[in-house]
Image (cartoon, rainbow, N blue to C red; front, side, top):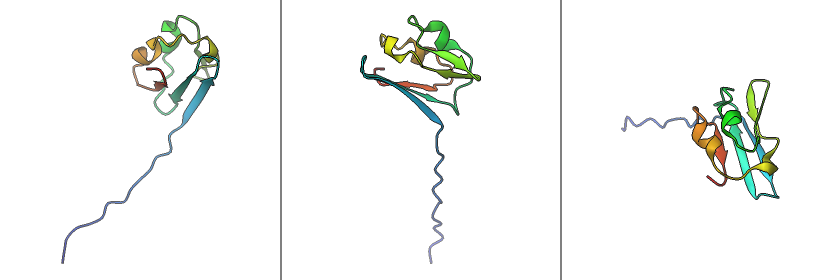
Length: 85
């Protein structure tokens, strides 16, 4: 008889918010479970894509994005995923 025990797979549903720009052709995803609300993305974005709302980053101005990826590089918790970066 084998002592093999099958591990139970646990799936955590991520709390990810998405902003899509058809005009620019990019999507910005922010993982709210990882976002600390530090505002680094707000500070480094040259086109003011980001705003903090209720302690979390949002990207309401995604149509202004120039796809420089500064937000992704600046985020200390890796909460931002950008389709161009």
